[in-house]
Image (cartoon, rainbow, N blue to C red; front, side, top):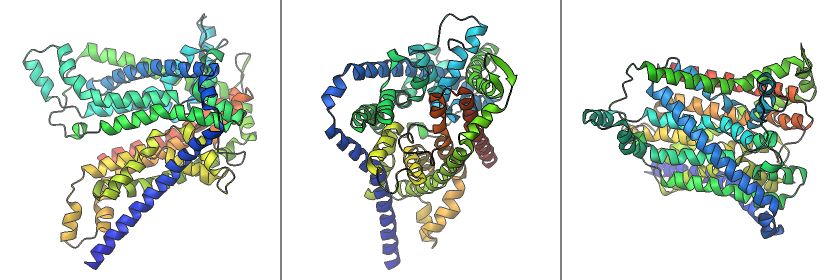
Length: 529
């Protein structure tokens, strides 16, 4: 009895400790940022012509890019899940390559391809340029559609075919089947996808910074300019509050829309019958999108190894040397260190928190779950500013430790939810059976739960690592010349018009992340077999 009571107190103590960590690392910095607005003239800022113009641009760009991204993602998810095309894992890898490099790199790729002196502009004698609204929308679609694709494909995989088979027997048309069966099934997940993509686009400053012009100033670019260049933290806090709004709305809608409908077992998986016309269309779409994805990467290779495009196409390594002279090797070391620590610490915290929230049903568990996913509602740019205001002048500021902290918190929610869902689906009576047999919770955790969650844990490690390598927004306000991660070298090279070296840095990040992703996929495939 005493041991059991001691064990319960230990579990509660750990839950309280974890909850305190998230409150201090997420809620307190946000409160500090909001408190910083007291020194700013809120009304004057939000009614200024520059702010109103940036707000309108942000909404127009984000709504347009979201509509295109979600539509494209639905078509690609259908191609991968519901057609008979071969090498589906390769297509998935190609579609998700844009997730492995910073958004600012996509903007640079578009500039070199479709700028006033771009490769395709000259080759095809195009009469338009990429700068402005449609350039930002195109870059935003490239950056955001992989996220929507993965979310929608995952939903489609778990749809039951039995209702469709019954509808076909009854002679119900395809359009009617979509309206009555497909749309109700996809409605709630699509709401989540739409808000996720919108939030991703509306808070990004990498693409607008590269291909935007004076007429397409967005709120994130305005915030970046006012804080980094103007050191106006009050105005930055006001813009941060505005950028926080859609993310909080997405968070609340996702919270209210949670249900178990999509987690059910598939009783009748879809049988993919031979259809050459359907598969031909799927191949054509997949090839077109893959070309769209691979062209910027080809541009990075071209810029890296030619002397000066388009003036001198002779081969050279001087751009690599110049990037290394500017500290690319050192900054790569910083990024690798940050990514490895964030992956390990974030995964340990995520697994521990998910065990309590999914397997120990108490009031403290429910509170822990809520604070653990709170960071999902905070864009990286806003979180970075909140950390800068909270820790400026402290021993943490301008250290690798604060960069590790902000990355861990910024990317925590998604990996946590992965392992939470995994633990939640395992037999809820495992601990009860273990206690009956005299087996402690610790042994059940290490010998039963963790072995069944190996693939999910590897996916968590990869997710933390890849995102920590490529993020710019969360760390923009927190690094100095000695702690700078490699991704922050890209804006610096852009400022000095060294796009050839910038291309090489983008390839460095892509190469590291692609290697991690391939290792992760190989291990998950091995586990599943």
